[in-house]
Length: 278
Image (cartoon, rainbow, N blue to C red; front, side, top):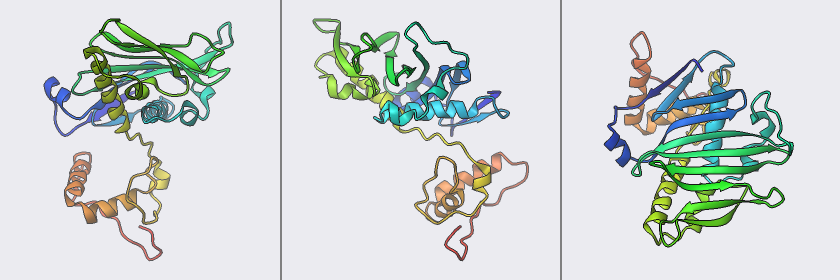
């Protein structure tokens, strides 16, 4: 990508960021489709910019995939075509395995929390490695030990009588999202693990990755819920409902549009047509 623009209402200090609602602040495409070693800073509202083929859609695919995994979706639901996510020219290992790696950082009350995920795409789709860390401390780490079994070996920070707790976790789900069901929270270490996992999950579930399709956005849209779709096909419906039902948000939108246009912007209006579209 030739440019990443992050827009937010104001510049937050580090202390303000740590006390605010958790949000994703960095996306990492370590090895994903046609992108390698990319680290993308994210704001409350971020635009990926660049010419066709530079990786914008690839970044959005990875971002949306992490969000869905954080919401509890299975790896098969998230990656319908996993082979397409394997880095170009990636060669299989001795067991004929190929895969990809993505990750992100979520900031919030626990400070920056990092999540890195390794997914095997061939010969079968599964999560083969995951690491959740904060402040240089590994809070959760999983690894595939026995390919014949449908789980990974997980170890999470305990800081009690034993430094870590080990247990199997399914290889088709994100371990971080499962931690609240597995960690008792009896020790300070366990509570730190739970707090970091909750921060990451809340941040990922708040993600809305959209890939606008201008040719569809220009067409009339049926009147519906007013909730923006991933392709922005129903932009006209969203504009109409926002202007009618939430004047404050509409005013913020008009101000944002005005900031990005050379001329003055008085309003952004959608018109209801006779056939039930807008």
